[in-house]
Length: 289
Image 1 (cartoon, one colour):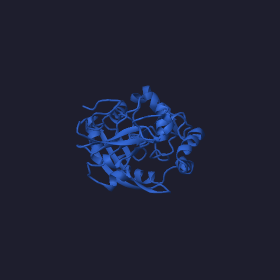
Image 2: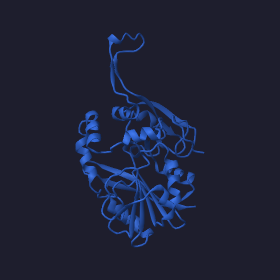
Image 3: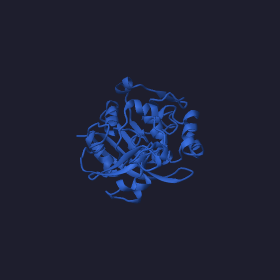
Image 4: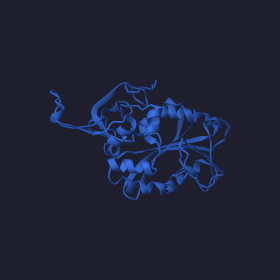
């Protein structure tokens, strides 16, 4: 049983209670947006007998499940906190504030406004499982710029909390309209690593799936995880947390599917060239049990 705890005591994927724990810090940009915390220097003038002078940051814990291997932040943000964290995501004000805490972010952010080249590889991998011109729903797809089959779909819908301008040919769909649709493919890509309760989000997607619909879930295969494959001792190596609050393993994603009563159809690890660095993603394709 996977529970929704604001300070996690159980695994967010399999519900297990065997968690390795190690102290870490929440990065200042996230701490500012979520909690209103800013770094502060404790000086001798504070007159604190039991605290050493130095910089103070928002503390947290890194947790790793000893069953499925998922590594995650112990804080599980509320809806209001998530709204504060992602308000104006990557717009001018967001980028300016984040660049203040993380000099150089604005340069990196410029890469996010174009279609990622690796999406073509995802399409090639998905194509054998789908009709020639599939009907696609992208959950959390933003403008639709990185939605698979953007130019080859029969119809393409996006469900997203943002109000960004959509790509030509993309139609926005509300939560109340999900069950009325008939989709060949539902995509949830680069979303689960951000959310406090991944299983709850997947369960929100379920009404959009019929017996024939396939769902594609994709998350980053973070450098720490792929550098130590199979390791259950990574909590002590994860000293800071940013907007990616969940670091998945392939097994953890499989546990999420099982918890959501979805059946694995196929999976892959895909190397991704992001322009300024190389990365990998984990992708799983599933359907209703």
